[in-house]
Amino acid sequence: MLNLSLSILFSSLIFVIFKLFSVYKVQTLYAIITNYVVACSIGLFLYKETVTFSSVTEKPWFLGTLILGVLFILVFNLMAATAQKVGVSVASVATKMSFVIPAIIGVIIYKEHLGIFKILGILLAMGAVYFASIKESNTKVNFSTLMLPILVFLGSGVIDATINFYQKEHVAPFEFSLFSAMIFGCAAIIGVIFILIQSQKKPLKINFKNILGGIVLGVPNYFSVFFLLKALNNPDFNSASIFTINNVAVVMFSTLLGILLFKEKISLKNWGGIALAVISILLVALA
Image 1 (cartoon, rainbow, N blue to C red):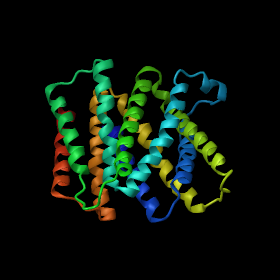
Image 2: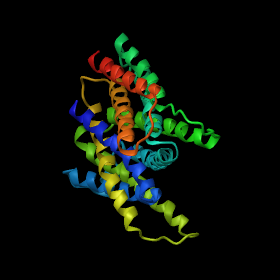
Image 3: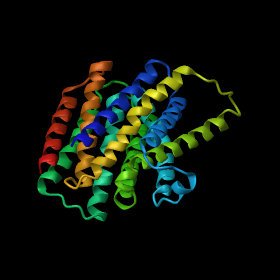
């Protein structure tokens, strides 16, 4: 459970850092690219074996790192936009409600068994993320604002399902740090290519604040994935349980951080969602 707890902690910090980007006027795209360079460097540092380009490209999971690299940079930018425009809690809920996608895939493809209490816990978890995300506001919700959390939900679900697939089928436990590093490395390369294309229209400017923001983001970003991989490797829990506990706990924790740090308003329904989150986690964990 320690690995799962650490993944929850680092994942929650990501949403807080995204919110701080808007407070301190950090340019999200540049910080995200820097963050991937930092995360990749951490993974390579922690990997004890010699790394060469040819040895990495021959790995059975290399294609997965390319796919995840593209998804990471797309979804991370969407997460940042959601946190800044809609709120930390909504961004975390849209991301973490996606646990239903890998959970369903785990049951259908990997024949994972879910008892009555785990099923009840997952159903309560879906209610928890919904009620925790409700915003009582008089502002009109336009289509573009609504699409942000929807896209984050779908993208995060695909990321979780892909990580689960490669962890089960292709990545050995001693390669977790390298696999994580290559995901972030591919995302960094894609991001650099994107800003180089952009620089044809607008010259690049080195900004220390963006670099610092990327460094601060890169550390929890790397360890959120690294410890999730280690948690998924635990034979005592199936992937449906891991994703349910991880994602719902992040919703609960990041919502509370949004209240404490940014004075985000929370309604009675939001508190009800947090209460449901606690119950759902207990049901899934103890079943």
